[in-house]
Image (cartoon, rainbow, N blue to C red):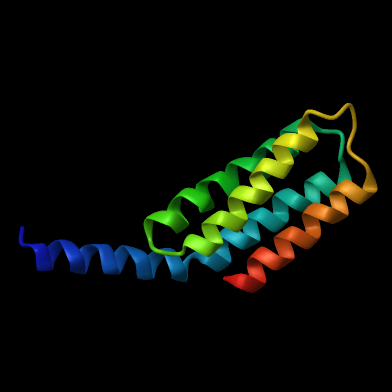
Length: 106
């Protein structure tokens, strides 16, 4: 396989990644809705964390570094929230605003 073939495949994978961003954001919004409904349930936050972690890694791979950095920051904030004894309405709204900003930046 030539360098041109490899580059073409990577370009195709990047286009697929970008085309599938709306699906990723939809899944994050579904997970966040569960977090909002039950902010004390760690499994909901862990799912949102997993989705953000996946996005952060893929974004960096396909040259969307800013998106990856934003996703990583939200992921870290969720890690911080999970260490708290409970999550408040303000915590939930903070993550909601961050997710909206992430989606707007994409």
